[in-house]
Length: 114
Image (cartoon, rainbow, N blue to C red; front, side, top):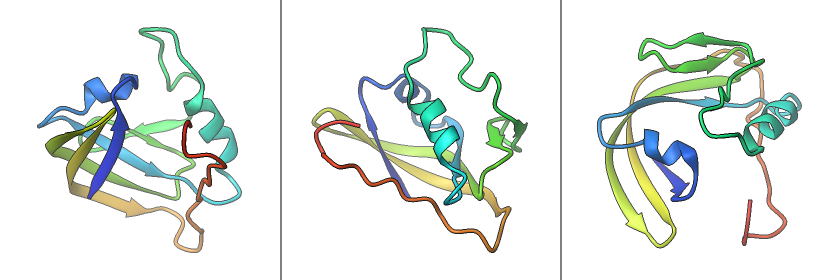
């Protein structure tokens, strides 16, 4: 699968070819606190997971305890597109934690900013 990551996002430096990460999929009705937490600006070097319940994935990345599902991924390729990187990933493992849950969807009112 692919993920688009803005070049100015701190996470971009952790998504180089060969890097591993977890894509946590949030559940409808339970996603707002986590979404708001991770969308805020953090000071350089700050622990973005402080105060958030997690457990380690096989690849060592954090899985959110409240995630509907997760995918353990490895970055296979990257392509530069304007002010973003398109990151091509291979899924190594994953799980649906709440089979009856619905995937949260975030709709932006304007496409110019997050």
